[in-house]
Image (cartoon, rainbow, N blue to C red; front, side, top):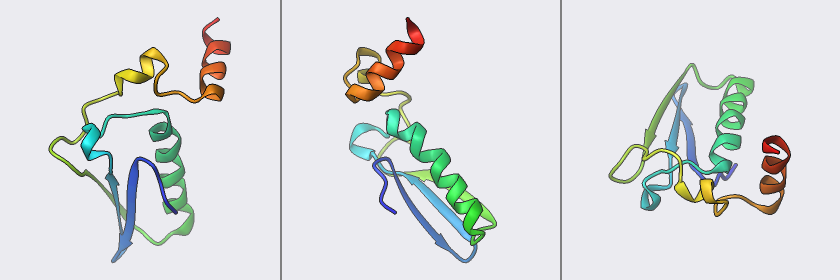
Length: 88
């Protein structure tokens, strides 16, 4: 399966989950938070891996949350509306 924030591979019973937003310093965006549990659950459900290695591409492992998310720039319309329901 293709992901926006990750590259996933499994070999020799080891799953390799790689943060794959190197040009953006692997910053976290809303899809990061939906994809990560989906990936972990998929690995668990398939039972093909006994260990998970998490690494990243680019110069930095992760620079934290993408600041555009805090100004609404990283959210889709539905995510923005959903967030408004929670905060108001």
